[in-house]
Amino acid sequence: MTNDAQQSTERRLQFASDNYAGICPEAWESMAAANRGYACSYGDDPWTERACRLMRDFFETDCEVFFVFNGTAANSLALASLCHSFHSIICHETSHVETDECGAAEFFSNGTKILLVPGEHGKVDLEAVDHTVHRRSDIHYPKPKALSITQATELGTLYTVDELHRVGELARRLSLKVHMDGARFANAVAALGVHPSELTWKAGVDVLCFGGTKNGMAVGEAVIFFNRELAAEFDYRCKQSGQLASKMRFLAAPWVGLLESGALLKHAAHANACAAALEARLRAIPGVGIRFPRQANSVFADLPPGVVSALQAKGWHFYTFIGSGGARFMCSWETTDGDVEHLASDIEAAAR
View 1 (cartoon, rainbow, N blue to C red):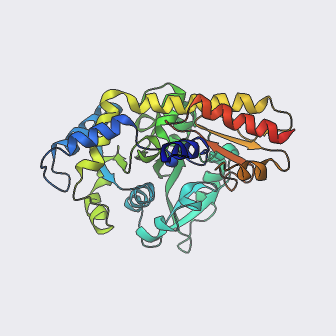
View 2 (tube, rainbow, N blue to C red):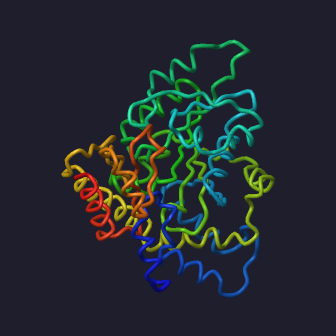
C-alpha cells in the first residue's frame, strides 16, 4: 500500500474527534500568505489586527480579542480573569473544564474551586445553579462568581437562544459572570441558523472561548471578551502562561481566511450534515440506539454487544468514555459521505 493510500484509509477510519482532521484549505492558504515576508511580532502585525476586526464584525460588537494556542489555555485563563482564588466556578458535571483540563482552571486562578451541577443533555439545570449559589453564604464557602456553559455541549446538544437568555438572566440575578466554552461554537451557529451575537453577548455571555482547532485550523483559539472590563491585563495572563505567541500572525491568519471566505460556518454546517446523515443511518440499524439529541456534529450511540470490539478490530477510531457510556462518533470539515457510509455499513454488518 502506498503512503497516500494508507493515509486515505486511516482518514476514513477516524471518527474519534474533529481534532483528527487536517487543516482546511482556507486556513492553509491564509497561513501561506502570512508567511510571505517579515511581520512584527507578539501581535503587532497586520494579520492579527485584521483578525480582530473580523471578529468584531462577526459578532457585531466592539469586543476585546486575544489569540492563544489551545482550548485548555483559553478556558482556564478566561475563567481566571473572572475570579479570585476564594471564588468558585459553577459548571455542568460533564463539562470540559471539569473532566478534561487537568485542573488548569484551578491552577491558573490560583485555586478557584469548581462546583458541579447536573442537567439534562449536558446543559446546566438552572434550579441547581440557583441552589448551589444559595445553599451557603458564609465565609467558609467558596463564593460563586462564574457560571461556565458549553456550546455545543459535551453531549453534542445546543442551548437555544431562549435558553441562553434564561441563563443570562439567572446569572445577572445571582451576580455571576458567564463564560462560554465554544470549542464547537461554529457548529452551534451553523445548526441554529442565528446570528452569533444572539448566542453570546446579547444573551449575557461575558467571555467566549471560540474554537479554531476543531474547525479546520492547525492550532489556535480566540478568547473574546464582550465585557471589555474583564479583559483588563489579560495580555499579561497570556504572557505569564506561555500563551503569547511571538509569531502571532500564524495564530491569527487562519481566522482571516475562514472568516473572510465564510468557510468557518460552511465547514461547520458540513460537519453537522455528516453527523445528521450518520444518525439517520444508525437509527435504521436494529439494536442501535441514539443516546442524546443529535444537534451538532456528533452522534452518541448505544451499540449491540460485540459491535465496539468488531469496529476496533477493523481499525475504527472513536471514543467510548464520553457522555457516560455508549460510543461517540464525531464528524469534521473533512468527513465525507463515503466515510459516513463506510462506518454505518461496518456497524450494520457487525450488528447482525
